[in-house]
Length: 77
Image (cartoon, rainbow, N blue to C red; front, side):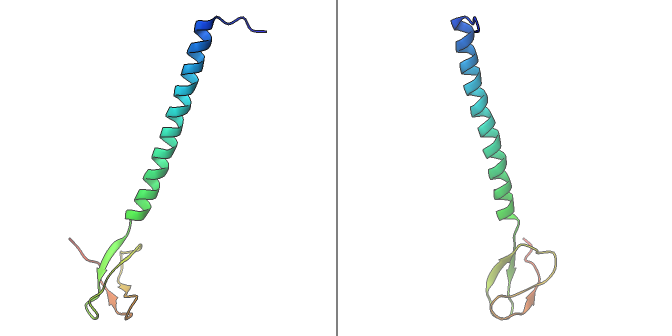
């Protein structure tokens, strides 16, 4: 078998645990960042016909209102 001193075994055990924790932290941090960006990538519209506020993911062109169907331009703040 392997002849490994106790100090080296403890170091490998701790280093492996820290590596797993850092790997999971990086994975879930990047995954949450992608989900947050996807949720924020919406544009706000205000219908001038019925007065409703609504959002849509593709906001570069006029989008129809879900209530009355009137095409409105994106709000610019």
